[in-house]
Length: 283
Image (cartoon, rainbow, N blue to C red; front, side, top):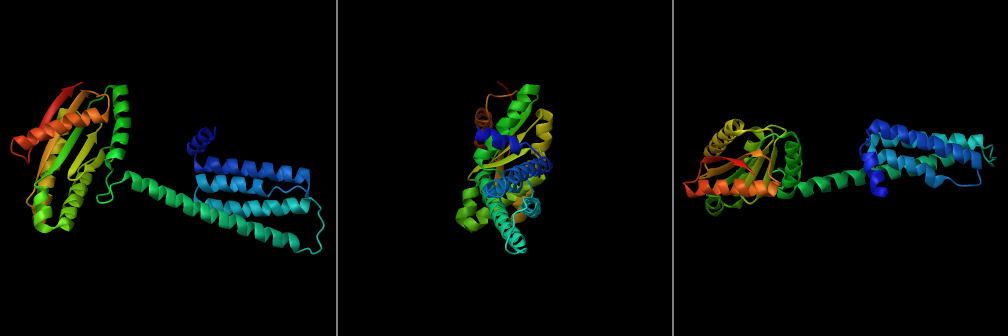
């Protein structure tokens, strides 16, 4: 039940969440007024604040804190509750506002940290590309879409030739520069809808949606050319073996597609390295 509720809010826009928060706040204030000052509603005022802070923008949460504090103050005045000093309701309202603001600040920080942790869990720390797990997850979702609409897809498997020579001859820091340069080149040569990932070590993969043999040849020929230029600019004695599998019939999973593309890439390795081979494949 809780998971369904969280998914429900995830699918709502910040404006919709804020509107719902205002409705909940109004409901709490009404119930607080009807039950009188003897029953405390403190916890119920914080609930809509938590909702808005978590599912909307941080500044909206801070504004909502002020709205909630003022609402609670108005309920206090409407209850006709007598105080020994007229400033006491103002003081109470200030204390409540401070509590709301601290709660919102802490929740906002927690939200940012969780988002960063989630991003780091899906991203290769060195290159900034998707890691192997995230690449497979996203590519699988595109595979399902392609299967539904009977669109071809292409998958390229790229291995850096002689990468070990760079690490051994120039040091691992230079090897890291190579990997970063490869990632930057791949990013510049592909569309925002393409899926890029570092599978591990010096191996990279690119998934292209709605791409046939002709489209794959144009894209990967450019990628190979730009990679060689980047290697020349860096003075690195490396090449790039690229195996490209084109699927007119979508495979069952990205793992199956990767096995095919990996096999094609190793054919490049066996026939001299630093080249491209394309293979049309029907599952």
